[in-house]
Image: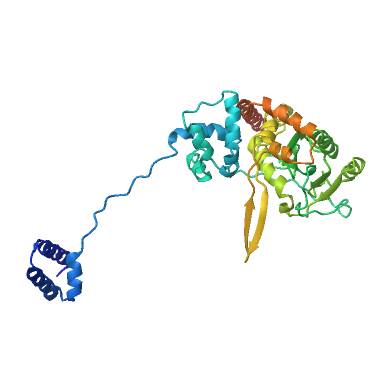
Length: 391
């Protein structure tokens, strides 16, 4: 007897078994099943009494976060600088408050509450279509300098830092696919404690230009700069920088050669604050440099320091070769400055007044407009260079 025939036979006996009213009739059906299938009597009784469960289908889960939330969430995400969900979630209530203050967003009933309480997983799901990964990669122009390396101490960690004023800095090349010739470079400075960020761009890097930009950017920090940390490039490791730091009473350290993790803070900021804004194209035109400088000093500076959140490593543990990292709640550099006890009340009050007058949506629109203009200028510049036969 085949499997399907056996199943059909059992179903037939099961229907007869359930219709029987007398015990002797049921006993005969059990004996018949034992004889024909050669199974134990108890097994035959269990088979005849078996009641297959009816499949009712999967219960539909109630949708809490609908597609109507994608539009306002995308607006917040763009204003916040397109961060990851872990950096975006803590900032959503404050960004919403600022956008409502300047009538930049319209929400239906209950949407604000849902936006504020949604998880990072939900944020990623709703923004999955908006995330476009870039595979571009820039070139490194760091040329190790043998000068003064014995006089400049090496720093590998900033674990003991608990006050603002300790700066990591680096130069980012805008050289395209070749580091030969002249091109623009960005000097990028980042405070370790608060993540306050300042940038400057110039053509044809020299030691004098790097020091001049550093001197100008120091005045833009809302606190006193106390120390500098840089890589082993000749633009930093030279007698001019050495004398400048001594004259200004700045302590200075350098990273180890070929160890980018020694400058992990600024290396990460190079991508977030420079590459995602300017890109990887070659820049040689002074007009383009002036536009980028305007972006650095206006919209992008205010968005980066007042509205773009960052994560700080809270704890790192190693268990059997596996490293586990725990990060604190994402905050903006402005929030970290306000929380610092080392910054004066006058500075905090000045920053608060500036923060209250800023409209993040308007700044974001202005930044996008200038970035579109920048993209057109770079495209036209590269077209002209190719047309003249220069690569």
